[in-house]
Length: 287
Image (cartoon, rainbow, N blue to C red; front, top):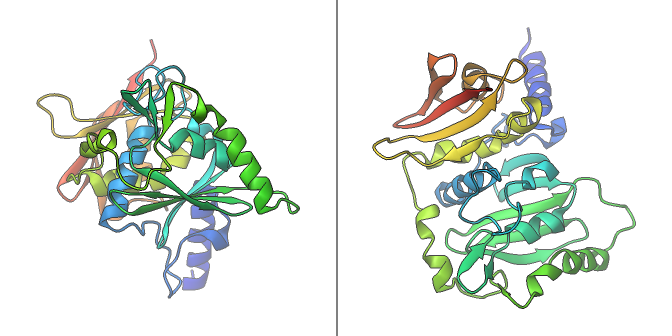
């Protein structure tokens, strides 16, 4: 097989796994496919974000809305995720709605709902631009199929409608503050650098096939007491992948994490490693 044919097959495979058009697959200037572009601080943010998104109503993240599932259900609106040199892009059906769920508010004067430190930058007719103050990381939420006639003013109107709930009497907006607030800074351990940060950041870039192709909605849990590895846990049955299949996706498929290795322990558990970090994969059989 010629190098051109091999590259074409790889691009097609990546596009199918990641739900991106072939020409939208991130590549280097020489044309080589490169799925992970995040620098260290962007990785810090992405590692935190995937831990937020890979949560459930049964195991809510600390940043979840206290009365409803906002962050844990956000992935249901995603169409694709791409890491690029300028930051992370999430293509979604409803960019403004996802922004309203991720941007932080102070709830009942003592609890933060949303991602601490995330700030609104600007918007276009189809894109909401956000920045994470402590890390400087960028996140762009992009409407996948915007109307050709939609204007920036239309987008602004939609943004105001989706964030209207932030103006309730018991809620204070944090996403329009110039500086990081003390309440947000108290959560800095969530974006602190860890040995597993690059691995969790890479997991976010490959989350779409886990959610959509495998139809799994796992929980990403911090290390249990006395343990060193984060744990990715999901319910499984005869119709859903076991740990080995998820491990193969992340270590051997066309969208594998470079230099990652997977070691199976049992059909239901295994360890994904990247350098000196690890992620324990655990499929919990139904019943």
